[in-house]
Length: 399
Image 1 (cartoon, helix red, strand yellow):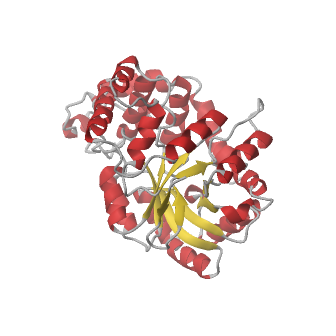
Image 2: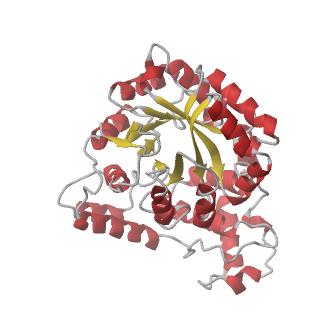
């Protein structure tokens, strides 16, 4: 196992982290605890020392599971990362209540790496107004938290602003070869690194979409490589190739995935891909982009929508649907993101569009946005949307 140093505290973290968002489950949807515990402990025995969970994962059962999995001496072998559920916070007192409950769930006296979960511009502004900085300072001073960070879903401008808002030790961003110019992106990655933040990467395989199934046109590109690698290895090695990255989280719920990821993590040094290999990955990314239905760059010039439609997010999920063909997954992602349940914002569904045309006047790509939103409604909403939104609210409730 390779390790990379967090500059602000000197911790050497395994380049592969174990993400506890997608643990194996039984037929009833509950965590398959025997199998999941075996997987987590096996990974730790092989050198993984960073384990990530959060309040809502597995309907609130991920943290209690991890507390049990880290018994028998395993707690001392790892750094635990979990997160303040920012969308549920309504007062300064809530912050302490959540943290104290998480300590009980995880059966520990302290959290090694504590993140403010899933913040963007508005969400951070709300938390600042509720005195989250005082909460973080006090929790560090009294020993309940060792290192403070945040996980992020938003624009790169907001990302830089939040990086500068507090003396963070680390941050967590979505990053893969399809997201170089999305959310924090490469610009945010380098900005955080310039501030000596440890950088934890989530979704290196874009929710598994970059691993399987692979479109035939993309598969042909991978087959051209002199050194043969699986699509998952190409995606993971591309992320690890960046020296700014500290840990890559993987939601490993199959034994074969764990073995493959551990093997890659033993070999994926920074700057180890050749220029020809980097260009090969770039070609695969370009081919995926060609498969996109809507040429939206996510510039957000069309925003805000007078009717509250989250236009770039609608198009992002719609493009994922057509690039990767994961219908059920895309529909649920759409329900989560457009319901605002995760970001604690209002609804942003495509069906809210009233065809005013204001967005078309602003779009530098000259997209016929109202017509495209109708296509989003046809393929991602439908009669089961309300049920999916209810499931999302259940997943992200206080418990």
